[in-house]
Length: 311
Ligand code: BDR
Ligand code: CA
Image (cartoon, rainbow, N blue to C red):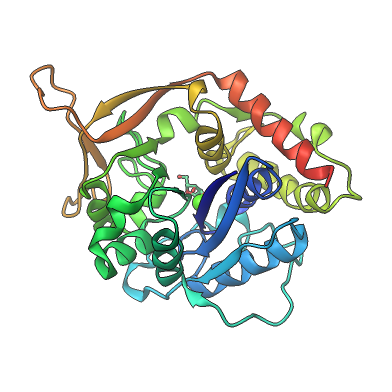
């Protein structure tokens, strides 16, 4: 199986992505590391532990704790995902285990299997930047780096110009975007094309399964907030789409571009910028997903969830 580390800020869509990965026999989830974003660092750490306890996967990953980053926490997504990030359904962990800081765990696991680990980033890039700062050689030891974030068409969600994960910590995002390795980016442009209607609730695994119980409790909350706040009948699951990209890259059309992050703009803080001039001769080191087989990805997500419910 392919070794992966999942860095996330659960978040209901992060939780869906975890369900997809933890039961997939093709993956060996070495670690799940928490980062502040949708919710605070502490809540994110608690949510990661609660999710793993609830799902009780066949092989337990190591868990990483998020480091509080006060100055950055100017936004969150509690209005979308609920005060606790997971739909306020009372998902709680037993006593919080003592955990390593996320960036240390990432360094340890990547160093232990150089060239073999796929790092899947579903939240702000704080931990990845911290890991690179701690160990600059780390980036060249990664097998693959998959990032959910940014917007190629310039249409954000946290602000009119910026996507949430990048906006939350633009300096870390810039450091990761500029790091000398190939990055696979799954931007809002493509995650926004995969929509799920209420039918999704009928396709989920049974309530009696661990994954089914989690999904059937949390996803209705997301349908309610999408309707209430955005006037939409369907929902998006950006992190699940990014997980699908890690599992099935053939469902996406990518282009090699150079990407960077705006860290000073008054209106554009956290916006991603890509060089798409026809004169841009140098090949970029960011493999950016620009098109997606939306039906294929939705299908792959539902199938992964159904499989998760069989365990
Ligand atoms: C990203 O921000 C969060 O709302 C989601 O969990 C996802 O990682 C989408 O912009
Ligand atoms: Ca997320």
